[in-house]
Image (cartoon, each protein chain N blue to C red):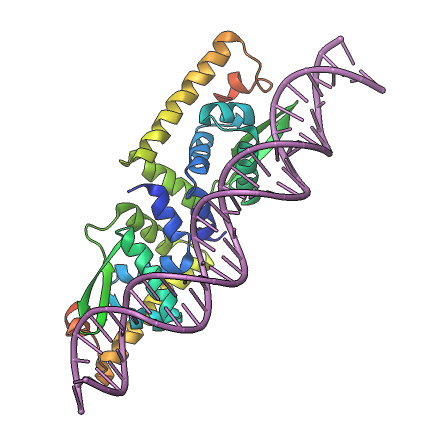
Length: 127
Length: 127
DNA sequence: ACAGTATATACTAAATATTGCATACAACAA
DNA sequence: TTGTTGTATGCAATATTTAGTATATACTGT
């Protein structure tokens, strides 16, 4: 894949945030929506864009669609995620906060026994 | 500066090529035009975009405008240029070829004693 | 078969980015 | 001053991206 396609993708900070979250583990659409506080339509479209680029992949679990980084993961993407996690800018701080919120979300789901894609929360540190 | 602004900038492969060339040393507009085979208007506009983002800076030498990476250089930009120089994709190969062509251009200029911004070719490995 | 939940897509309007032409400006040389 | 070269910019046309509404699909439970 061309580098510029990856850049165009991560030039949108919402998409960057999604990729950052997915690098930590798979998530279903509704939880991504909740973490990013974004409408269903928009989330679905963002995911479709990245799926088309083969940066992410999805599988169905009942009515849920669970998304994860496509393996083998794109090295340019990983390179940039690693860089941004250490860097200082408001977007970078957001990426950190997102990961913390992901942790809280998973905790809440397991604690409350909330519905979640089949066994994913327990077995894969998600969703 | 926000990361997404850098990404939006380098998502355009022409701008990426310009930045790659400038990382090797300063160049004036007409030589950038020649190396990228692009119209004067377009080159000028691309440079204006990157100057506004403070990724590059310029100074005048007679009628020439000489552009270089703004120092301190943007670390995210450098990180990506370094990555792409080692990577395998058609855009990455283009970056390599551009650097070779830059070498040939400088050689030709010094050999032929072509006009060039004052002393730049001799003293700074350019232009 | 029907209703409900989760997700995707078609279509449209609005916002942004890109392109090219014409023109302006800045320095220089005659 | 005038002409020339190198470069920048205003403007209009075009292309691309984004955002929202409505609707469709896929699965589940009854």
